[in-house]
Image 1 (cartoon, rainbow, N blue to C red):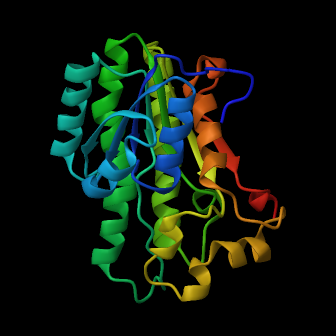
Image 2: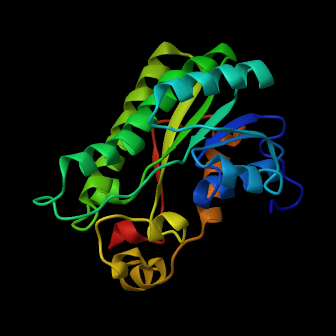
Length: 257
């Protein structure tokens, strides 16, 4: 919950992908608490419908981030129902790991399609919507693996490294255009979310965030989805009006190790 009645995002229209669980759901809750009108999107519309009201979402819709028609429909929906958007939090993603010498090309491409292509499509279809309103904020959820690499999650790390490069490129383009849109990324470390248990191509030990954090994270514990959500709320707020093109690690010190 926000402290001392602070409403960082009062009346801002914020679209969040992956909003049915994990970081996306935490972002929806925190931003609604800060006064935002939250538009929650997820490929799992059944799960989304269960949590939408409790999380304070103003509206929700099914959106497969790897499918361009879904993004076009999402932009049209936001324009029609809310008159535009002020911020995007792109959280949806999957995790694929495995040995690079045996990994199938199909698995590699599926990983990039969801994480990297999805981020590209978010920028492609939502940046014009933000420009229509005179500016706003795009926050892409990357990962510390995209900054330091991973022997276990190489496909995932590669996709998130691409997200970082995409973010910096979009931030430069928007700054050059003077469109008032800021573009940033958050790099979570080991966060206790459902995606850990759904990581593909790795052994069970690698999908335990508590054990992984105890072994690797300087602070000695896994982060919570709310840790990322509070960072996202800051980047979407006017308090971050001079912040663009950054990768904000929220990782318990993992990048130091």
